[in-house]
Amino acid sequence: MGWLKVVGVGPGNLLDMTLRARLILEEAEVVVGYRRYVEWVLPLVNEGAIVVSGEMGGEVERAREAIKRALEGQKVCVVSGGDAGIYGMAGLVLELLVREGSQVGVEIVPGVSAVQAVAALLGAPLMQDFAVVSLSDLLVPWEVIARRLEAAAWGDFVLVLCNPASTQRKDTVMKAVQILEHYRSPETVVGLVRAAGQRGERVILTTLARLLEHPVDMLTTIVVGSSKTLHREGWMITPRGYRW
Ligand code: SAH
Image (cartoon, rainbow, N blue to C red; front, top):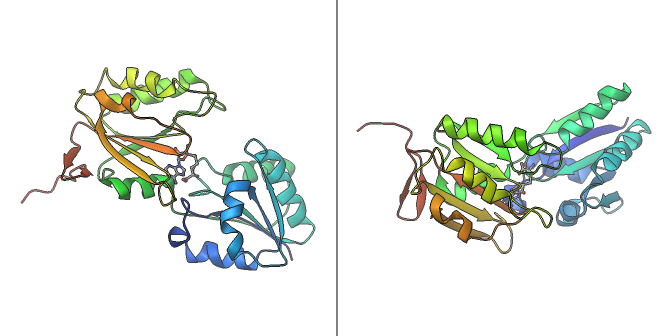
């Protein structure tokens, strides 16, 4: 019997991959995913396994291929970076399965998200309510993203900003900062982490006023503190509220 498992493989190093993800990779007959993720999980994959990898933008095609192979009886693992259900492949696979009425045993396997990995490197910024916003307007119009930023900023949430830039989008962070400035002081603590858990990992603690001085790319996540977030001895901490 074939199966289809959509597996979050963590932020980019084997230590942060769950044991469950690892066991599935070892058992899979077919591994499908974005080339960069597939390449780094390859050492864990069965030697005889078929690897179907491709570039960014080929997600729908890859999801279809994975479903087709599972329906044919193969054991298929779709790899997705971080957590598969956070801007990952889980939604797409389920949408396609539901739309096409395909009867295949499917499982979504959670992973350590970049959100968690980044927060841990910065300290403990997510100790109170937080919102995660993707700044990519590829699939969501900018007006919607701007409204969400505005609402989260108004609500004094800690804000995690994913997909801050790409080769096509250079001014997104600037537009986001312009919105946040209305609600947060220039001294608001901001953390930037690039390539968490990977070679070239970089952690920067700065302020909202100085955020734009730092380069960001597709592998960067930005955490904007709430009005309560502190910068103490190199750590970004949002106090939980305990009194002692
Ligand atoms: N499903 C993924 C998120 C995919 S969206 C997860 O749960 O982690 C892609 C965005 O996530 C990137 O643009 C970047 O903002 C962030 N990201 C992914 N991996 C990262 C890493 N290793 N370090 C820092 N940010 C990362």
